[in-house]
Length: 408
Image (tube, rainbow, N blue to C red; front, side, top):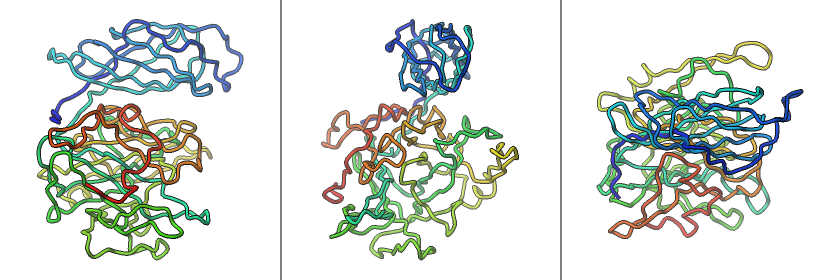
């Protein structure tokens, strides 16, 4: 499949096509009328001249009910019952240059007044002719004794283009922020940068060519994790691994037959790159520009931020950031019961995917998030859906593609 390098712009609400009928009022809002409010949706974005067609989903967080509208102008009025809403917008816009592209945006709203406005900032979606994240296995498995087995996790990156790609220099990173906790962060940099808690890199000298439609696997340990007491997956044939040998408690070992990806930054002790087993984080892949090195990135891209905490004081922290312009692909992960925000900007991923539906869902073990197949290439390989909206692009709580081992 040919992936053009283009920008997408989504957020225009066309007409008044409401698909759900009622949203109950917010349980946390007292002494307000239950009559519907008149809500004005204001759509805007840098270099956006007109809204062509944008679908907007407004989900009431207490009831889970969703109202959907499609707009064709920058300002659209709807009637909506009072409550607390999360808003996701995806659609087509027209730029000041006359080009029509895709864009997306997110917002949150406490609808308490009879007449109220909400501003939705649209970001132009960007795509690259490079690898995409096809699958992430972060949940792990439980042994037959019911104990958590914390190894055998992996990333599967696929060449969804019609050309050969090289893995050398690829960055794999996870978010510094948890989608289940939405603090009032300052400065807020999401529109320009991705705050990261860990980054690993495939060294340039270990890069390998990957044909159109083929994939690479980066595992924490390239071993067979399926044995008499552990229903894991056989990752012996992984292309890269990132075992942590600095923390004896992890019990990880190095497979000398498999090249190592290098963790170039981690906010965790022992330089660990550990995946949250409930998926409360976002993942992305990127490449440094030609002029950037690991050393220059560590020197110039520190991110200091602060937020008010529950004790009434200010919490200050420091992590690192990756400019959105460097990012090739990303996926937000969460679960419906606790989701509050997306760590990745909507131009990279305007939705989110999950394993399980409730916090600490026991059904999540052994499941992955996998990208949807939408066709077949000329060489017989799969073509994967990529709209920068993980809600639509991924299969939640999927079976692993490596149930029978890694087979290309």
